[in-house]
Image (cartoon, rainbow, N blue to C red):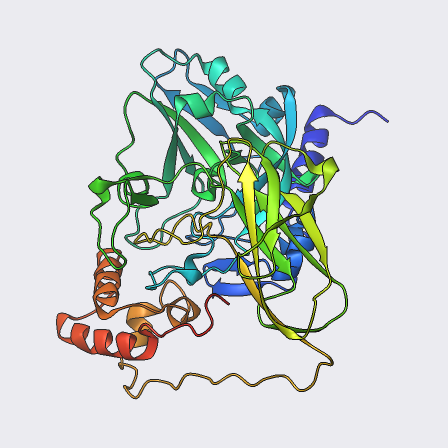
Length: 459
């Protein structure tokens, strides 16, 4: 059957507009509005993370994009600025690769002292199968000038109130790497709306802040981009700092490559088990330094180590590898399990994490405490922290909940100084708060959501 060209394209566009047909399932809600969803620990049992369990990170509300009207502009330090449709992009050679996508703040909830931001556990990460055009092919079509230094990305998302527009840049070298893609498919399907439809950057080996979603603009720059999200956000200290230190952005560097990392998926921390054979399993991944080549596991708190078995059919450059170790506990006891990954360059995970003020790049050796008993009886009750005695300010909802819900606030565990800085940031971004109310807000936030000791370590 012959279908007219215009009708075919409209059918194609309609299929794209139905892309987000996978309701999220069993996710941990870090923020309902804007939506930030964490994959549960059971998600690490999959090699390719299903779309319905793939984590979601959004600074703003998800934009609505009509692919029939959508265009990608390539401009700046180029010989010939170009404007591309999705049809144009699909005419370029397509590339598919498996890569981990990990939020830079994954593991932030484990830092002590606590730092502001979404308190992710281990699940702000997923292993996806991405297909798209090489960014290098798109840039070559426009003719990049010798003066080019960085490639700046912008999307269709709209900032909230006075929040700066989310724009990120990568060096020319990373842009011309053959693995850096402009992806229009995820796991064999059209890219879902929550994951950047119709087009997103795939910068494999790098943290998710460089994987810009809802892409509409690629601008070639002759200098480093000096926008907020490069010069003030997603930065970490160049050297170790004392925990709790406030570090000026100029003394930090951008978050780029992921570090080698592993996660223990089972048994979970705090699990009670009988003294029968157990399978310790998890996943491990790396960044620019190369794929994971080994994972060692300790069942005695690090006094001795045994090599885990890695899945041999998962030798990809940027994807994670599942691993496991069969273990029979010698006796009833409490065991501290550790896992330590190594990448192709010989890098291993640290036993202790260097603190940074934004809680980025957590990759400390994971641990899980397992209580091995003859038989599992009643679960042990955990004491719950008591609430604040300071009443919520009358104008709290109008000032603080206009752009997001209180779930973002409730998960924080910050010092008074950190809350003071967060209040100032929100005011700078448009929160309506009278100066005379500021101290009351600070008292309430610190009393209700101040630092509390985390019994037993990361949960």
